[in-house]
Image (tube, rainbow over all chains, first blue to last red; front, top):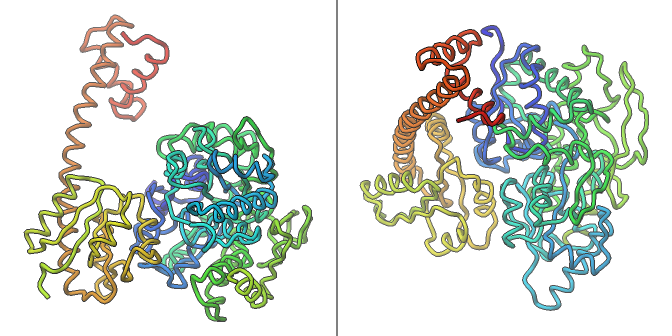
Length: 411
Length: 198
């Protein structure tokens, strides 16, 4: 054991910590020469702080978080890179039973369709404002999270101003279901199993999913402390290989029940394994006795799910600008682009014969169907990707995208 | 301004630790100290007492909520930022290590905040030490109880003497390179599942 390279990784109890958990528990880390220690944390702030002071070399991070760190948007930030994504999808939007009943009156159907449910929500919001009722309150886990940007994107595209028409608060994932049940909030966007939690407890209904709002989008990444990564390239490479092999294991349906049990165990999420199964199987129990099959609800491996696309980094950056978290400049855009490191990913995984995308960025929304793409070596299929409202994000046209959104989104 | 004039808010779900911190602050001449254990309604508390310094434990799952509130809530009159003393990396590490963090209002001088954070670090460490000792004593007692139960099961099911039951547990533990209490735990769990426990 003594010749193994020690790496300590922080994580938050969420389903998409799966790759880290499996890399450790199924021996992939050890086989790659890594002695991987996983430390469960209670807040993203702790993850950030402990990465900054060197307690952690790497961590399970919200995909926009390393970008926010490098842009100086958070206290005690250290330079952080994202050399690998920890899968695609995995989030949903859950609303209280009361709000769902209101939405149903305005045409919402139990089909997870973001356009239909968003339209109904808009009607409810307008009606409540006319009647002088208090604003609806939604929760997300962090201001620099895919949840915050997806929720806002969905609301704005449905004509709801997320800053004026509703209130958005920050809550830790494991408290969401309780807060919804207690009536403190009316809805939330969070990763699994914390949507399923409300359905199982009978306090909420799943209204729509990330996999429908922005198809094929990343949720968490592996964040690595940049200075450590620069001085320990071999250890990082070994870890990326272990995580990739963990992704292969997670994607095999034969392992599903074992994965659910592993994630549910007390050291990790500490909840019933049945709570993990909807996300892992894509059969989402949305409440009210209805189960909807969602293509690619959570994707650990396929569609280059672990590839750190620069177009993903830039979309998150565009939303930071859109919602006033930072001003747009070429310098900031460069910082965001360079936070995601497909070069490190390629160098680590090419020797394994892994199917790699030909480019480091893509036009988000360009692929309407699953499409085989030219890649180095093995075959690779990408897409469908893109946004539910049909708009495209071309990272080469980011100025125009930001201009259009900040003009329209904040009007 | 004197030390006394600083308004300090301590947020800690652990009541014992919170009172240890409060006592430390008062001993150092700070008498404008408010302690809360629950962040429900925290925005109003902050608006009312208008704190200069906020001390919070890192175990608190609501840190993200608080940081966001400090950044943009209308309830907070002055901008509040995490106390990061860039000139003193060791003190940042010590604070994260101890499990405590301080937030200060914009413009407050480091000389005034540093002693507060240093005191909190010392007290947090003292508390952890105490808690670890208690935990060790408690788990030792529980381990002994678990081994007693496992012995009882073996004595009943295999007709062993107490001494032989213990010897069997110890031998199994050595063979499997595990602790005796782990073997005892497995045995008790298995017996419970099979309905064999007396």
